[in-house]
Image (cartoon, rainbow, N blue to C red):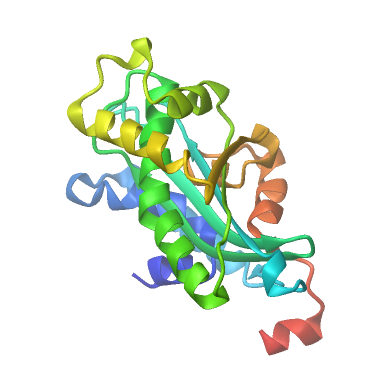
Length: 234
């Protein structure tokens, strides 16, 4: 529970393994014991990691950015995908992390596009739209919500609201697709393509190789090089 508390408040880099372990509570194995030990060892060896946010712009220059991603059939036992989302308040010289999501999908997707649609709907309605309403109230103006997706097929499907390749999807998924299409017709929400290397939500959907880990931390706003005087004030 302490690790989950830490992950929700200040360490988004540990949310994915915690999410994976939470799905094994009723079917625990010795392999899961090893995963817990590795997670605790990682936390114990990285106390200098700090989640940093800065606001250096005027209120009228700020906007919300929601990064959304999904893997495809990443769970070997159930073939289910994982949804990932990362929300930040940004500006020309500002970046402030607000919320992050890593959640195993409750149904099996038959394609990458389908899993991306499920992830997009979950992150948008769980975090994106509620935050949009809040910040429009706080800033007393219309705020733009930019949604970043690294799958171009998903963007095309969402904008059209239909795809013949997804005609098999269940009623719930169809509702998600129709609702997403309506949201992005509104001027307050935009969906844009982003390269996978710049996708901040990638770390919430899969285990990244070691050579990509440092870059993923930077995308989240996690600093590992803060001077000692700033660490003492954190």
